[in-house]
Length: 310
Image (cartoon, rainbow, N blue to C red):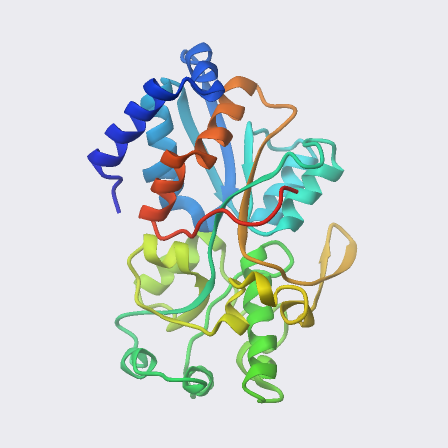
């Protein structure tokens, strides 16, 4: 998907008219560049949407790095990777860079949201059955002999974690004991695990039959999908405390083992304290939260920003 000329022109007009602080920051940083580290599922909207749109208006060169969000958080925290802005999905990666002293509490702001859907390969022999699936039918299809299910590593990627959370809640919601293990096997099942940037590409090429993924990424890459009930897609704030929290996952990263629980699927953005171009960094974060930035997110299949700051 390419960002529309109309969106770019509207963004440019808004920049000239508003006089917002980020517009002034852009002017001061116009001869520089800035780097954004973002959750790998955001590649299309970042590299074709908000990144070029901000660059066109500010004159500041955009550079993007998309990888598994928790892996990025560890690299940034260890200062083995440098970036000006960090945009993960779910709170945990942002809290990790906060603990490392790279952002202050409350600095990570929600800029978009998404939900879990079942995306499938259009060339899969199971495609017709998935497209027609009603209710719990999809859970039976994923257990068919020869079905190739793909996901990402839950130890490094929030999306990999949410796949397992979804299956756990589906097990409860559809009253199917053993469902999660029957589909995913072990939490870290090497036969199913791929890197986040490559997962949907493999789906497009028919190397896997289906994955549970963020609707935003699936829409951005124009892949077919079926929606899932609010009870298992992590989009309903009213279900966050008493229902979504029933799912749990134990992960190990850098020798530390933690038990995690899911919440709403929200993307957060923050300018990092060690940014080499702090004016452009904060300007970009403000741009994402602006009406223009929100319009671009919506164009690429993202939901509105929701929830409190981190």
